[in-house]
Image (tube, rainbow, N blue to C red; front, side, top):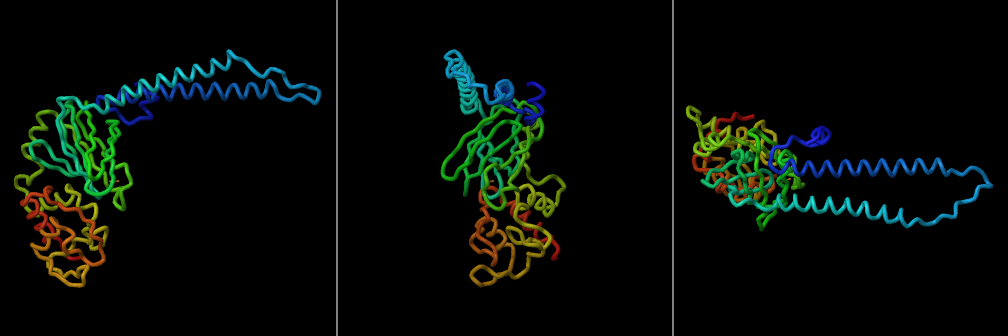
Length: 315
Ligand code: CUA
């Protein structure tokens, strides 16, 4: 890739990036050349044929067949090149290689969750091995989201009620930014994550261990880590201030007023139900928009989150 394009585009991190950037460069350079040519010609002719006085007559020439054909055929050739080249790249971007590893992607307001072939899950952190085609089987639980990793030149809408498919093959280990690039409500700007590309061996270690409780880590500390890693942090604050959802500080043991006017004491069972069936008992003043964590959190994770909430000071 030339230096101008590489200064405009994000670093290339996938097998398709080079092709996308080459086409982008071609369009950029030919457009710039045509712009310069047309603008230059306009300025040249405006000066050369400016009105010099009342006596000067307008030229009688009103047609030039060779010129007409030239400026019709040349752009046509350019457009055909861009179409064929673009179509080839488009097809390669959309036909998933047969040996691709399939990862299930679920988008919802406002986080991403990923499910791996062995049943492991992660939230807002897609972990993949390097030099391996990855097929993403994507769906949304609510509105339209869009999966976008600029460094991979991978972007695909994620829709409710049907699957959309994208694929990429990362060429370097490292961390890459993942955006939701379809406006999906209040938390849209917070719906970011990352793609972690690991070496084959590191990936296998990660799969084995998952992101479970580390050795020597207390249950409350693990819960605190889940609070961030499982994206609770997108909607809940820990400082007593309400966000999209209620603050979790001092919540445990408190008596909460619900939407229907009844009240409930916040205990372990209420917290568990609120994680798995969030719209069952919604706190007054909040909308029933929290997604269910059914299938995303294991029992141990739920225990840890409850332990973490118990440990939070009242504010
Ligand atoms: Cu999801 Cu924007």
